[in-house]
Length: 266
Image (cartoon, rainbow, N blue to C red; front, side):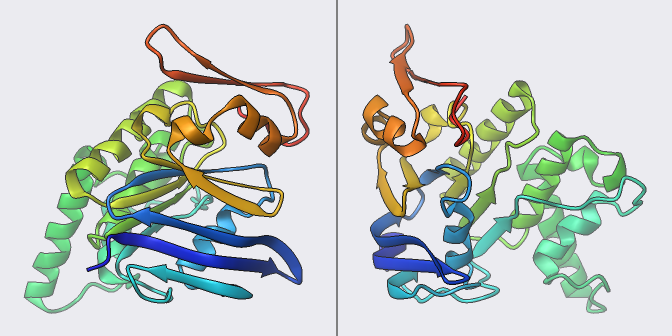
C-alpha cells in the first residue's frame, strides 16, 4: 500500500481556459494534517476539485490513494465552503449526518440491518465531533460553530480516509475557530485520517500542522510549516510584507499588512 494519500507530478491546471497553476509536484502522506493557503483566486478550491474528480489536469498526473481521482470516492469526506441552510428549516441535524453514510438518500433504507448501520454510523459521527446533543435539533436554529460540527460529522459518517475541508473557520470567532481546529486535529490523530484544510488565517492551525501547501502566482509549494512559513516566502506569496515572528514559547506568529489587496494573513 502506498504511503501517499495524494501524489502529483508536473501538474498543470486550467479553468475556463485560464491557467491556474503549473508544474506542481508534491505529495501528502497518509495521516498528515495539511493547510492549503494562498490569495483569493490562486486555485485552492481547484485543488479540491481535482482530488474529488470534478476536473482534470491539462498536463501531468494526480493520484489519490494510488488511483486516479474519481467522483463520489467513498474514501473522501468533503465539507464545502458554503452550505445554504434556511433559517426556517426544521430538518434535524441527525438526518443530515445520516446522508453522509447513506449516499444522499433522504428515504430511509427498509432493510433492518441497513437501518441499524445508518443509525450507528450517525451516532458515532456525532459523538466524534462532540455533537450528540445536537442530533435532534433543527439545522435552522444552530449557530455557525454548531453547523460546522454537524457538517464535519456528515463528512465523517462514511468513515473516510481523507477529509477535505474548504474554509471551515470562516465566519467563526477566535474561540470557536480554536475549538474546531482542536477537534479536527484530534480526529486526525485518533483516526489517522488525512486532512487538507483551506484557510485564510493560518494562525489557529500552525501548532497542529504536518504540512503547508501554498498556492500563488501560478505555482504550488509544500513543506513543513517552519520551512514554508517564513517572512520571505509569505511576503512573496501575498505581494505585501508579512512578518513571521516567534512568541515566548517559540510558536510562530504571523502578522500581515492591512493595506494588502490580496487578503493578507491577519
